[in-house]
Image (cartoon, each protein chain N blue to C red):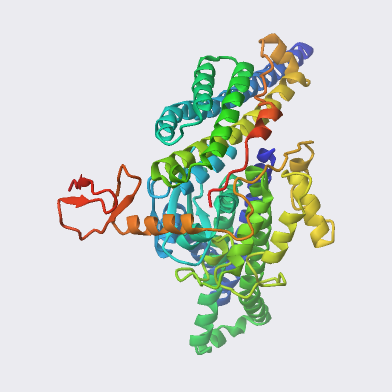
Length: 404
Length: 185
């Protein structure tokens, strides 16, 4: 069941929260006592907690708003792109979520997608125009299922927690190292009469300042990679068609465009890392995403069914080792979810003219074009600066009244 | 006296435990109902779409009178069926007939290029998908609920308060396989 996964995730959120919080307090204490040996430790802890609280408040209340506006994403309605809306609603139903996520589109040719929202009640799914233009319905469904899984599994909450802690630790270390750089050392020397204890604190503080951000970052990346695998597994289960996501990932990775509005901070959010282009064959410690070829291979190895057990089996056989990706509690059910037949035909040469036209329409709509469906079947597209009160259909000659 | 207090405490603890079980059963039954409501919404949506579809299609399709009559007939049958089992059967028939229509449309290129038809077809396809995804979510929920009321100790509470096994929503495999693959590319 999905619920076990969600619960396991909540437990993990708590552990990360406590663990990284303790690291933050430790850093605050050590840095504080470095400058003020008597009671500076508590001042340091206080500063660390303030930084953490401010970051938490910002990301809790306006995190997704900031992310969406940085990415230049625009909200769309059902009429703007019915297929996208339908696919999202289908996955919402499959995930049994109470609320429909909002849908945003970025007008960028690089195919990619991400999900935002700490709670499922106010979540949003964002896709690029390039994604809509290059994927067929089944592939789009795979990508949306992946994003819906992030929402369903509360991954965004987890990654936000981890991200805030990472941010606070990085900021503390930066402040410390910079202040060390700019201080002439005299202040520090004058207090050196407290002797050896002070030297030990200095060494510990330096080591922490250098190591803590790196450690926190590695931890963050490791969680991020695991969440991507898990979201793939849930996506296969939700859409019941692993090949859809697999071939979507293939198409996304073969794209040569760079997503202009993505940066280092937003990169971990996306379904495929928008920054590094050249395939990333090896999963190194500093990558936010698992290598895409491996994700595709795992999805294509799922032959028995679309359930978690099949994904775990495929994961083990591709990785060549036994590792528990999905918690035991999520596996013990003897559920078998058959893989369904694709909706779209697998023709050797794919004709995506229709979806390209739909995306063109969508971008026009986002730029305030007006559309009129003539009874002859033609769709008339009127630019925002067209001033006339009527327009004649170029195909059948019918005159349409334009309402202002 | 001490034994009496211990006895009372144990009784109270057991009482609270059973109240908890009862509440969780109620919660689960509500989730089943909610999941069923999801299916119902989509089934109703499909019933609403069909008259529009027939209206759009009939100007183009001259040789498929029988098929269209079938669709109309199955639709009204499906709309008047009440139990889960009945619905599963009639909706299955309707799905099958709509699938045949999709195939038939392949012979009418003008229809295939009609914007209204394309929009309707996307809605219909999506509604079919939503029905089957909602069905999966519903059956998941029913399985979970039925397990609960058959397994100890919640079966005691279920028996006392008359919780009944919920019915799965199974569309016969035959009709499901008849739904053909259609290309929208």
